[in-house]
Image: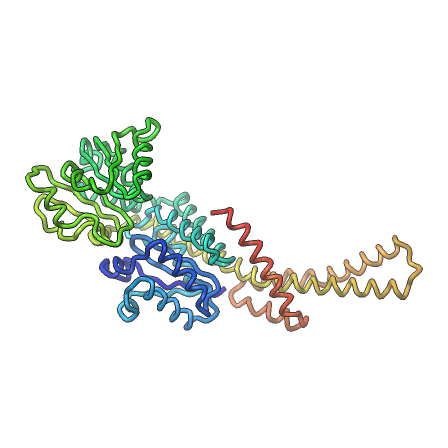
Amino acid sequence: MSLLVVGLSHRSAPVSVLERAALSGDTQVKLLHDTLAAEPAVEGTVLATCNRIELYADVDKFHAGVAELSTLLAQHSGVGLEELTPYLYVHYEDRAVHHLFSVACGLDSMVVGEGQILGQIKDALALGQEQHTAGRLLNDLFQQALRVGKRAHSETGIDRAGQSLVTFGLEQLADGTPVDAWAAGKRALVIGAGSMSSLAAATLARAGVAEVVIANRTMARAERLAEILAEPGGTGVAARAVEMVAVGDELTRADVVVSCTGATGLVLTGEAVEAATTGRTAPLALLDLAMPRDIDAAAHRMTGVRLVDIESLAEASADAPMANDVDQVRSIVSDEVAAFGAAQRAAHITPTVVALRTMAADVVAGEVARLEGRLPGLDEKQRAEITQTVRRVVDKLLHAPTVRVKQLASEPGGAGYADALRTLFDLDPETVASVSRADLNDADVKNRGRV
């Protein structure tokens, strides 16, 4: 295993850099294919959220891998390599596993313990699978990260350590007032119909707003979300969908606006916000969860406007989470990293053991054939008994060393045992490689149905 992750997040880079480095869906696909085209990488996938961009790869050379992945991130993000480099972090092998597992548990999130990252990790794995860039290592890694994240949320109180970005953002807008009391009777405008916007709309509906208006570039998605919100089995709130061109008019009637789109430019300019507040007496609350930002930062300076965005959320999330819950999750992560490493090291030696047993089976077959030539008078029962006896002898001789070598291989530094086995028994490298390729193809087929 030579897992490498190169990335930047809200912990390493200012929001201004994260905004400019944000990757669209098409750009992520091109980044993945260019990663595999690069010589050091044989697998790759990208985890891109509103506050992190991370490129994961299985590489055969560390330094060349870091240089290549850093260059690719710079090229596809549009931020120059010299400017981007000071904000990049690098994790390798067990440290890379530890990092992803911590991310999956919400320990590295802007709001500790938030659970939305699990869906984003699932999306990252699905993208790698769809583009055929995620092989056995990344499939195993991301599947395990999802299990670790779910375990952390089910076995600890990490959910209480923080809230989702939506809830946390609304709490900042409410400024000390319970969100339900603050939101009651308000008119809400939600711009975007993706997963984050859908969550915001549902959260506002449950908090008691009088109406939710959904604006989206794809009208069908906005209409579908409005239908779901209005269903009796849903939130039952009054909800309707509008075209994006109607946002200006809806802004004048809204009390609270949540925007989270994939737009590369501003969705609400300073002029639009200022025009919507002219003559109104009630304050306008704006929550911008997009990266890059949807709402002009100039709104921070406007009278009668309260804007909470990713940058202000980062500043507000320094409140201390529940230490005991965080310590429990960290312990889970450490245990899972050790278990994952042991499993990967044990799996590394499996092709060698299979190749050894294949060679032994060939030797048995050859010797039995030679015996039949020298003793042609043997009947069917005698030949079967001799063949079974020879196989039992070989199996008994190989059993202890192959079991023991698998145990030793699961320990740190255990990769050398596979090399020793191949050297001692003069195993054909191509035979071992063919077993590895077969395992990889089987794992690829199996994992595609598990996301």
